[in-house]
Amino acid sequence: MTQEAVERKTQTPQEISFTKAFSSFSVNDLKKAKNFYAQTLGLEVKEQPEGLELQFEDGQSIFIYPKGDHQAATFTVLNFPVADIRAAVDKLADAGINFEKFGAETKTDEKGIFWGEKKGHGPNIAWFKDPAGNFLSLIEIAG
Image (cartoon, rainbow, N blue to C red; front, side):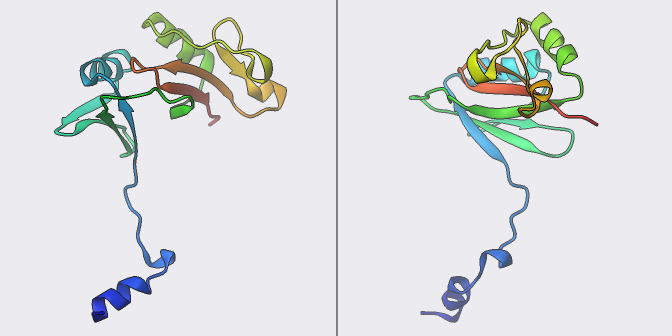
């Protein structure tokens, strides 16, 4: 074993630098995804050879890639923090977004808002789907 291999093998996780981490998820149609994220949500979308990169003002990015056998996530893949969930839901509903309605523990109101803060069950959240059926959410963050 070379000295370099020995050094790599003995590295601890604390010695590894993880910078500029990002998340990714799949869609079944890049053209529809680009239109939705850029036009409907108003995000900055850059086309890459392998897919789409969503870029945010704080420097974060999300990568969206095509997958022929895509199956929509049954969990939230992307959360959008907002200061006023009611206003954000109204604005996106005016843009044609339909918010999900749930019952039981995550019962939403007529607009699709789960008022978790009022119930002592976490933040206020409203879920919606992208054209590929992936769950996205607005999540109210104070301050």
